[in-house]
Length: 501
Picture 1 (cartoon, rainbow, N blue to C red):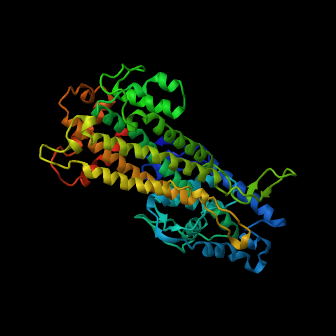
Picture 2 (cartoon, rainbow, N blue to C red):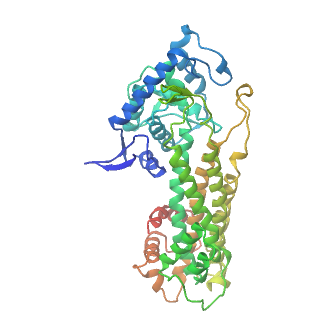
Picture 3 (cartoon, rainbow, N blue to C red):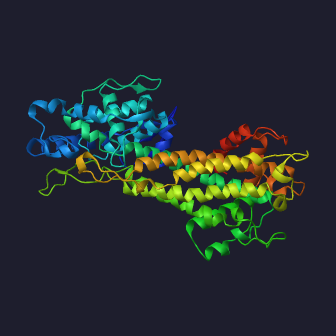
């Protein structure tokens, strides 16, 4: 089971094919922990390989004694058997596009290692040990961006296979493990996985989870900055329509500002703009979509879904190689698409709160929160910048699962495009981070300009008070008209810390 083990010098993560989650993938991919594989997990791999050898000895097994794709009907000549696997990797390692960031490729390696420890691949133990050694050394293969349509990350994992064989470059500052000889049975067994897509999805879910939590804090600061009503966050409102995400979003805002479950009626506006009044109803679905993606990942990260699946439970009680379609990532693609669609409205509402902060009829402050000069522009440009970033979110919300492809001479007539959905989500996360950064800059600026009682947002016993103190100490206090690029970058950099409040 994946668990954090704190050693003398560095934290260690034990992988055994069970219990891996997106947070753990991210921890290892970011170099904040090292991997440890117990001997029992290696024993599972060894037994799986032995079963595969038994099967190939007396029957046809896809990818081991036959070609792949449309070539599944062709047997591999005995004279070619020794090089069949290596040729398969060479032919499939044709990824195109820019090299992926190290973080994403390390996440792929971690996911693939954990999947192989489940024991369904029939891969040689030496290959698994060498992959673990590469992760431990902090090196990763060069992997290009494009090469999959949601039916297996064939190009990326073939590049990994060739790196293990010494035919493809390793990247990183450390010494890679010695090259190994890959046998025919190692090739398809290694690449029959969506490990890159799962690694990217894990990173996106982890990062977005933190941003969604930080959104509660930023929205609470905006609520205080416009002296908004807490009635929209009252517990009775959400118990009457008890969607889990809505309940959580409303509770978090109340907790952050120290409000009771049944806040007092407002003394000013009866109803706030949608960005505040409808915050639980718009942000709640994004929270639920992030949870739904994690439920899918909890299965996929620990799945032995290789095709063929090498099993010790055949019809006659012996070993079996089950040929199947477990590589097809419909659940993952749909979960990623759902999250992208749910994130877009919550990003739009951040821009709506930013617009409210710029409106003197709502704040009672100068237009655009400008300084004490005539016709100052203040944070006017942040609305443009935030909406430009939201355009990226809108593009990323286009469902990747609506894609279609017919491949390999027509025998593979569909694709989930989960790989595209994962890349879209990674882009959406970074765009959303900047949108929130824009709102945070404006909210803190508005609170600084207020002359009314500051008890709530300066009360360090409240999470919102600690959030304001952190932002106050970090963000430039100047109210002059000036470029705000650095301010937004600094605010975006605070969001992970705000998520912990």
